[in-house]
Length: 396
Image (cartoon, rainbow, N blue to C red):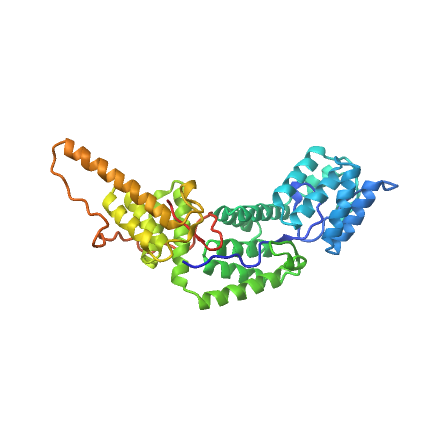
């Protein structure tokens, strides 16, 4: 199986977030400062921090916002700014906590400074309600998708990004992030298409939040174009058959975890048909047999998986938590032992019943008849799992 890696990183549009959670990421700046005739220390620090954000001086902005926080830990503008800086640093969980705190505090203060001029002079709460537009929802969905990707919940991220795409089909950040998410589940053809679509939009918007800090503040178009070139080169030099097998394996594990066994079974069979020498495809073929009660066939495949090339690779996603992070050979051996035990129990039961004792092939000298997947399975994977680089997937 091929290594699966993320190219560059997911992004959202730049926003100075002195808005609340629903206004995480807008295309352009949304900078809001409470209105007063004389600035308090907290307001002055927030203003200076926002100016630093405009110039992409995020470390300086962070220091200013934290100083403001020491003056007044309950100020909603400061809390939102700290949330934004946490986003820029990739600390999405911490950002979410700051935004929640800001939402709890609320504010009736008027906005003095905003890049959205129609918001200036309005109460903060009213402005936040006004910001609940389609673009804001799309950007919030992109933020949440980034968090899912960081957690390894890749198919869930794809699902969420596709929902965002229905709201704004040509949003370059959504398209780029769909490229990242699809690449993470080894659907390289879809990933390349999304990267190319994002680059074709020629957006000048900068990427404020990325998994690769080197791209922060740079054009999302250039980012997507570079990702497309890197992926295309990888596809030209790699084994696309093996990549597709990984895609079906990942999709199958996700579907089994979602209690969609019929779809999972088809995808495991397609993965095995594409790459019958992969330890993971072989193991998952054994899992099919075990699920269907064919213990002898399951035993054969588990034993074969344990001895196959690549069996020492670590498992990323599995249907059983104990298997994640373990070498596949160890999991296949454990599965084989469980099947052995089940076969022994079955044989003893048959013996007590007085029925003829059936011969049980141990290790299987010949390969069992193969089950064929349906024709024309479809090419696009359905949402979720969490493959990490150098890790493969198994339902065991």
